[in-house]
Length: 156
Image (tube, rainbow, N blue to C red):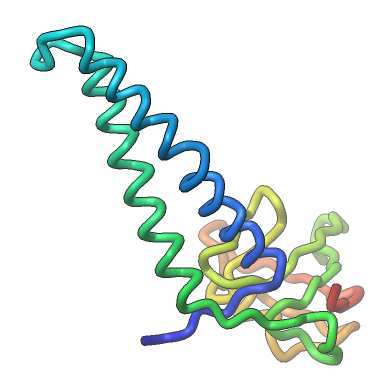
């Protein structure tokens, strides 16, 4: 079984979500199903069907998180330095627009572009890995080739 690289923050987030699902969400949906059953005919009971659908979603997410956590390889990025690799927080500037961006390279299961956490297998992460501060990189995007200069690399 293949290990899943994760940052400590990503592991904690997955673990917290699993605890929330098991200790709060699962008992709440079980209670909602029991309450909906008391309303009688289940074939036309929208509350019951909605609660069962939610239960299915919760149980599926619990299984998914348990699998991720059991295969997690938590990498302490604070002990790393040097060129860009997994866990790096990269501050860079778009060479065309002078727009600055800061991204952290993380595992697939913790990637969230809105939080500037990018999947290590994404085109931009692959272009950055192995580079140093001051290097320029070209990234092929659906909108064309973009050039970035790496301003700083940190492991926090």
